[in-house]
Length: 226
Image (cartoon, rainbow, N blue to C red):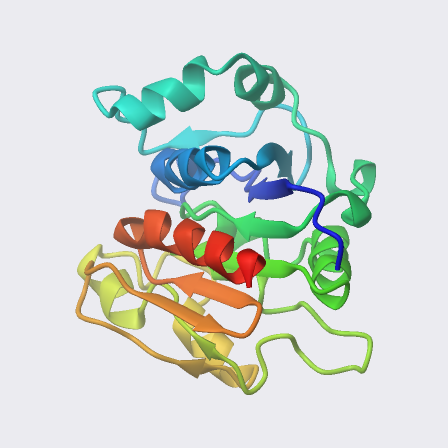
């Protein structure tokens, strides 16, 4: 495939953590750290969110210079103020899509059919589909043109059932991500809780948790280069 040198980062639009009264959203370092890797590698980065507009942010740490640079970047700031919707995006414009995590993804990524179609089209045009932490919620309902699930038979990493229990949200999230990926035929490969862990299976790149975000982006760049 002819490389376009553009990568799309997908963000959740969901801002409530079930009935806990707590807020959620996309986990800022899981967008910012990949953005840094991608831009350093010469890629342009665009954002998209499930419903468009201003996506809810969680996990911001402005003492992290990479997160600060992400928020201060003029192009990113403009996009965060008004992200396009998936239906406003042309898959042919991108070499890869990365589903950033954050607990909000558990409520809207799996049912985001237009976003899933974008990812399918990027993948079937020899692009890379990637996801980190809870971002693989976006993978569970991606169905390829041959009728199979993208993750069926693939090795994947995602936020594990053990990690969900460790943060006390097993009974809050609408489903357990590891379990549903396995139901779709994925071969989930887990590492110890909260340790960086990246799995590459062809043009599918996944990471287990926030510590894996940089490694996922580095693997995307390496996979595209190959």
